[in-house]
Image (tube, rainbow, N blue to C red):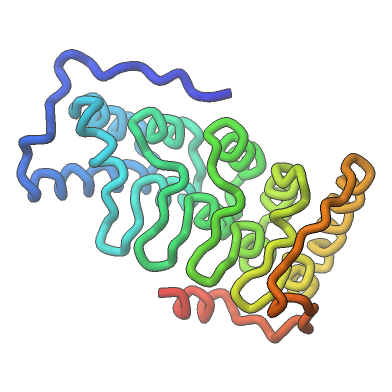
Length: 235
């Protein structure tokens, strides 16, 4: 269910005439509230700015190229209330980070927070976050969750939302599909992918998808990078 978004109060300020420095201060305050899961402070800043100027504030990236929605989805304690507040304020759920080209779902893929399953389903089904978006390495959020994540529940949520089974068959820039990455990480990961694939085959007629000739092979799984090396390589 989508959140019920209320309009800005009559006392809200039009930030279109604010200086660049004022916007930087406001953005820093919003990001601080999101990172610390301070809902009251976030709502204060949302009510301070008018509806026309809030989206620019909310989607403004920090010095690392991450916006409030990215920090929300990578917080130690995920908050659906903060997510919905950002969404109602105009946060883009398909927004990319500047350097890594991560969407909020890519950021979420690294998380192991409690209630991550329901959080992911809400973000994808209700707020329409794009499951098929790829980062600069051609990886979907499924690739990231399977290779560098630590939550089986999150992977299950991603697979459930891949209702056609096409996204799990997408290849990254190295030509690897989800099942190849899974086999080197978790013993249970590959079985989860196979279980969902069997369920899909029982419900749908498998579509024949043509791929570029360069991907008409199944390369062996390489020795994968550790998570710290992976993060450094994508900066």
